Every structure is written in C-alpha cells, then in structure tokens.
Image 1 (cartoon, rainbow over the protein chains, first blue to last red):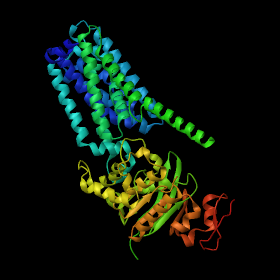
Image 2 (image 1 turned 90 degrees about the vertical axis):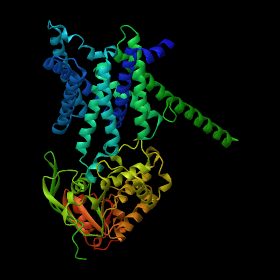
Image 3 (image 1 turned 30 degrees about the vertical axis):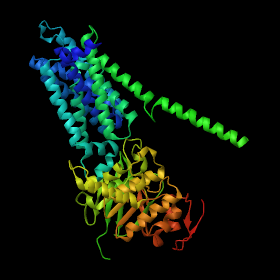
Image 4 (image 1 turned 30 degrees about the horizontal axis):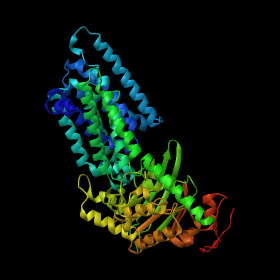
Length: 305
Length: 256
C-alpha cells in the first residue's frame, strides 16, 4: 500500500492522472449538485453522450488529438444537444424525459457511426479516440491537466459568481422571473457550465459513465446536509476523492479502465452516505423506528397498568 | 382618492393551446384595497395573476401597474406563488428563502449582505416566525410554509401584493395571522390581490372582490358585487355559500 502513496507523490503518470481526475470530480460534483436539485439528473447523461460526435468531428476536421481541440468539439456538440432538448420541450408536446432520450440516442448513435468510420481509415492518427467511450486515465499528460484545471477553474468560479442566481433558478424559477431576472439566461448559463464540467471529464471517465459523476457525488452529499453551500462543497470533495481513487487504481492496475473504477468509487460513497448519514440515512431511520416503537410499547404498558 | 389604479387590466385574453383560459378580461383595482379573486376551478384565477406578472404571455390585452407597464414597475409588485410550486425538501433555510425577496433590488451579481438578512429577519418577525429563521424548510408545517412565502413578499417592500391562495392548507390560527398581515399592508396604503377559495370569509377579510370564470363576471366593492346573482353566474348552480341577495354581506349557508 505505501507504494501507492509514494507513486502519488513522486510518479509522474500517477500524479498527473490523480490531479486530472481530482479536478474533474471537483467540478462535476459542484455543478452536478444543481442538476440533481433541479431533477435534471438525466440531462448529464444526454450531454455526455451527445458530446461523442463532437469529439470525432473535431478530430476529423483538424486531424489533431490535442485535448483543447477535442474538448471544444465535445462542448459544442454537448451544448447543441442540450439546446435541442430545451427546444423540443418548449415547442412540442413531448415530455422532457422523451426529449432527453431521443437526443441522447441520436447523438450517441451518430457519434458511434463516425467513430467506426474514422477507425477504419488506414492512417494511424485516429488510434485512441475510442478511449472516450470508457475513459482512460493513463493517457493524460501534464499539458492536458493544465487545460482541465483552467476550464474547471472557470466553471467553479462561475458557481461562486452566479451563486445567488443559480440558487434562485433551482429553488423557484417563476419567482425569479417575477423579480425581473431573465431566468432563461440563468438557465443557459448554468447548463453551459454543466456542459463544461462534463466535457473535462470525458477523456478520463468516458461518455458512457460520465453522468454518474454528475449525479453520484451530489446525491451522496445531499444525505449529510440541509444547506446548499455545504452540499455543493461536499459534492465537490466527494467527486474529487472518487476521481483520485478510481483513476489511480486504473493507472496502477493493467487493463482496468478509469471510467468504471471512478464511477465505482463514487457509487461506494453514495452507498455509504445513504446508509450511514444522520437523519436521512437508512441505519438512522431504522434506529429511530425501533426507538419509537419501543416508546409506544412502553406507553401501552403504562396505560395497561 | 382620484389616484391611478394600482392595477389596470384591459381586454386580457390568455389561451393554452386553442383553449381560452381568460377571455377579454377588464379589471381595475383601486389603490389601497384588499381584493379577493374568486371563481370555480379552471376559472383562470392563477392565470390572471401570472399574466399580470408577465409569467404567462397573453394572446391580447394590456396590463398597467400604477399607470405604467409591469416591466417598468417590477419594484412595486410582490408575488406569493402557490405553496405547492416549489420543492420544500430543497436544502435551504427559512431565512435564506425569505432573503430571496431582496434579490430583485440587488440585481445580477450583487451578493446578499447584512442589510438584506436584517430585512428578511424583520419580515419573519411580522409573520411570527423569527425564531424559526434557521430551520430547514422541509421541517415546516403547511401554515409555516405559507408564512415563509408571505415574509418573502413582505421583504420585497412593494406597493402591490399578488397572492395565489395564501390561505391554502393553513390552520385557523395561521389564517388569522395572515389576515392581520394583509390588513396591515392595506392600512399602510398598499394594494393586495389574493386568489381565495372560501367564499364565506370573503366579506370578513376583503373589501373588494373579482368574480371570475374565464370571463369577468363582476368586480367591485364586496358590498355591491358579492351577490347571490353574481355568485350563481360565476359558479353555475353549485354555490356552497350565497349572500341573501339584497346587497348586504350577511351570509346564509345555502347549499345547492
């Protein structure tokens, strides 16, 4: 075990991977809190799947696999997918979950077609694009991490700057409109930063499982607190620790993909939180139930006597 | 009192898809009155309030607040939505929700400070909930939730208060407390318009009333328009409570 801590401090690859995954967990946890509170857990799934064609198209247009280029392509496609969902909900009678389902599968299907096409090309430059499906931490370079940290920093700064507006949107959108806020602008802002939070995780976690990093840390943090600020900070820390644990495990274990291990780490946090958290946790609920029953039985005994 | 009306609605028509919800409604609410909006389910009461606030787009019509379009007069208007429109399990405190009433004058990016929190505490005082300021909102009773929303509107420090069912699901003691707050608002020259369900308390709580069923049936002082005839026109044959029909506000419990 100490070998891991040694690697974490001194091994270049492990350190880079841990830093990258930590940042992605931090950002997706913070932004994911708002998505979960707005009951938009599925939106993260749609955004991450919708990003795939953007990644492949960005590569086809530029021939480059630089993370800035691919992340930009992913962000544009993810953002277009989100706007499409919003438009479908506003203009048609389809409910939101159907709109999300349609956009998710159409974009993802298209992305898979493009990916297959690109992979059949003789040129070897495309090698490795498929790591965006399930993620691969070990491919992160220090230069990639610099980009991730910069983009993640922007998203976190936005949460701080627009704190009041994001809270108003999540709790009572109509009241915000009545106050004179252009809430659709707040909505587009928050969703755009959610897109940013998701795309910076795609290389490490992959499009298939990234939405878990939006939902799981937020759900885990919600169990422990009744304050929005504590929840957002807690979700960011949970996300970061899941990111570091999962990606380091992947980096030091051959053939263990990063996405699934990061998501498993986050799921473990959810499980722990839902079981053990005071007040909301299952164990606590069970103890309270037992105690109340005991009280009623005592009461009955007294009454009988 | 030849002042501009607090609210002036002209030829307002609102439709959801083809179905008209409000049809050609005219309404003048004088300043300084306490007006109830009554009507059966689906009469468009909530829609009227939302249309005045610009939350739903009318097909036709015009709304003026203190003589000018609503968008220029937002600071003059406070809003109490229906209690059921928000998630009461949201991780936030009573004080935090009430403080949202100050967001309008704060505007984008400016942060909540001591002045806003003090204003929110004062408003909580007025609804008798100061000691619950730091309680999580999921631990409130229905009546307490309603008073939180009322306090959030009070902190807006407006001239016109639009309320959607402020008495919905509250106990008798809370109802009394809310009525006191509304009457206090009126005494200080403000205007209150509230969607109201219990016909029997209209004459006791309010001085003006709008009877609405998609169209405006009647509007004016309770003593003049809250009549058996108008109620029958509003509710069809099924009126739970009727006045005795001679213009007085004495009530007879006359079912059917």
